[in-house]
Each structure stands twice: as structure tokens, then as C-alpha cells.
Length: 473
Image: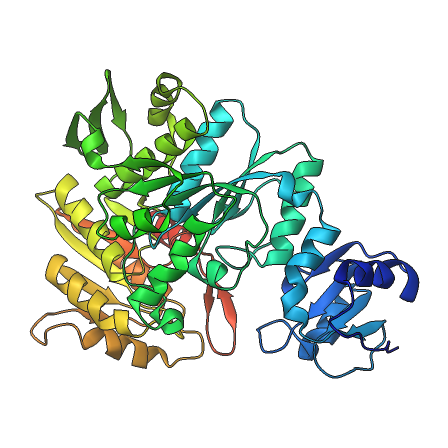
């Protein structure tokens, strides 16, 4: 069944009403851009040129239960009603806000930065919960209080609106959202009620997409100039702090820095700190995690809570999965570090907490991503770690050996290392041969539970592999 095309002069709200009520005489349950997240009763928005989108995926959408199609290319013939709209991508926000009208009533804390987004988001959400504020968390680890699935740090705009609309209907008025540079560049958060913006840090990442660090930074800065943003929380210790400060002129501003602590003492399992008149232990490794905690403290305080009510809760915070997650009883950790800066922070963290131990690292680099960082990660790891096992990360459509060779180009030929492409075998080897005077860092995938190859995606969980290796010994 094929319907006629509409030109872009038509009021899109009326168009949606026509599609839902008049032209098709069916009840649309939701909107979706991606067949992977499609639900029965959805209207599928078939954009061109994006994975799992577009006319090539209409059959998949129908199999998932979609009952109508909007398409931006030529008219199509398919088993369900369809309609073509010129320049369809320009109307995604209008479609989303028309169908999910309650989404904009949810107050959002938005967090951006190269590293730390997930930890800060988790900490803010935990603190709000402990303070009696029901909230939703949307980011790399998934979406809470929702049956909706996300395959990106920041979901597509229709998924976001759908989730937030459901939040509102379930009396959740606050959400904590990780916002990636891709999401800002692609306007995925357009029209949302982002009241507060947090900047964690900026280092090299995603240059396959942004091409230069300046472009990457410019994308991040878009969050801080949004009219809806009332307050900003900035990491004063980051080299790019002033750029974000200048971008956010006129907003209510809070800075955070390690110097906020009156004292910091490194202990084996974390830190003993003094903040104001409170002395307490923080059960996290790495000063970067202290910055993440300060970001969360600053955020919640800026939302109107008293500092003296927040600080006693800090020692109760739990780290997110896959972020310097210890594999007891061994001195081994899983971490999501997949940039040169993150690798450096993770290794130097172990060196500071365990100064008399050697450091072993297992890592690789993802395929179809920023190739320039591979040699830099190799160079950083070989400068800081005592031994390295190079392995696969997510090769995707690239040759795994080519990725490893790119990493090797940054490592001196005299450095002795092992190459075990099979990631499970690499982790098992590292765990079973770990010596009493060694710490092990398994880096790159963190919480992820799959590994992507050109022709398949397999189940692979770094934590489970490491734990099972311990049981086998």
C-alpha cells in the first residue's frame, strides 16, 4: 500500500495527525528511527544513509511490528501504509515533540566530555535517589525505568523523547543524560529541557568523525550555549576549561577542582579525603574519580540541595560497572579506557595506589574508529606499563591484525610484548599468569558484553572471562 507524497510546506503537526487519524485510520503507538529499537505499533521513520535506518530496513521494521512508514526518498510499495516527505530529517524534532509532548516537561542534567560522563551521570543519579528524588538515567550503560534499548551513549532523538515521555507519565520529573559529541552534532537533544550542563574533560577521541580536536570541542560546546541551560558545572582542572567557560557566558556557573579537597591521602583501596569539615574514605581508585565525585556534588548542590546534606552521602557512592572495577581477590581491574588519556590515567592510577607492583595491561583498539589514536595508545601503554598483551577490541569491518599493527607503530621495537588476537584467550592468559608482584588492567570494553566482527557479533564479557579464569586456577 502506498500513499501520496507531501511537500514540506505542510504543517508537520497536522501531517502527523493525518497519518495517525485520517489517512491511514490506524492508531500509532510510537515513533522509531532504528529497527533495532522498533516496537509493535510503531511508525517507522525511514531515513536514508544511516545504519539500521532507511528504505533498506523497511522489511525489518515490518517484521518488528511497525504499522506505517515515513520515507524521505522515492515512493515505495510495501505491505503497510507509507508516505513520502521531502527533507524528512528536518522534522524529527517536530514529530517527536508532537507525539511525545510530555518529554519536554522532564528536567534534565546533561553531561558531556571525553571521559567520565558515565561515572558522573551514575553519581548524580545515585545522589538524587538518596536525597529522595526519583530520576531516570540515560547513557552508555543503558536506560533505567524503561523497557527501551539504546545502542549509543546518547539515543536517537525519537528514542529520547519516547523515554522522557514515559518518565513523565510514571511521575519521574528528573533525568540524568550522557550527551556525546555525536548527539550534539546531530541535534539528538534538540528541544529537550536541559536545565544543567556538566563538562568533565576533553582529550582526543572520535577524530574519525570530527576530523580535528577543534571540531570535536566545538561540538561539545554546543551544549553550553543552549537557551534552556540555566547552570553550568565545569572542570577547572582541564586544559580546555576556559573555552567552555567562554562558550557559556551569562549562565550560572560552578567550577570544581581537586583543590576543593582540604587534603587527599592515597590508600590502597581508594582515598582518605577531607572536604570542608568532613573526613571520609572514597572507595575509588584514581584522582579522575575524585573529580567525577566533585562534579556530581557540584551538580546536586546547584540543583538546590544543601552541601551538608550531600557530602555525607559521597562515601556511599558505588562505581558504575566496568570503570576501574576490581576482580577480587586478585589485583586486577576492568576499565572502559579506550583513549590515550584514559589509558594513561588508568595505568598511573594503579602505579600510585600500588607503587611496589609491576603493571600489566591487556588492550586493543576498535575498528572503524579514530585510527590516529592507536599508535598513541601503544606509545602511552609501553611507556607506563611493564608488560603488554595486545588483543582485539571490536574489530568491526577492519582486519584485526591491521589494527594491532597500527598500535605497534607507536611502540618501540625493543619493547617485549605478547599478541593474542583472541580476546578471551588474552584475558585468560593474563589472569592465569599474573604474578604476586603484578597488577593487571584489562582495558577497552569495560561493561560491554559483545564483540563486533565484520560478519558477526559474539557474546564476550571481560569480567566474566576474568572471574572464570580465577575459578579455573
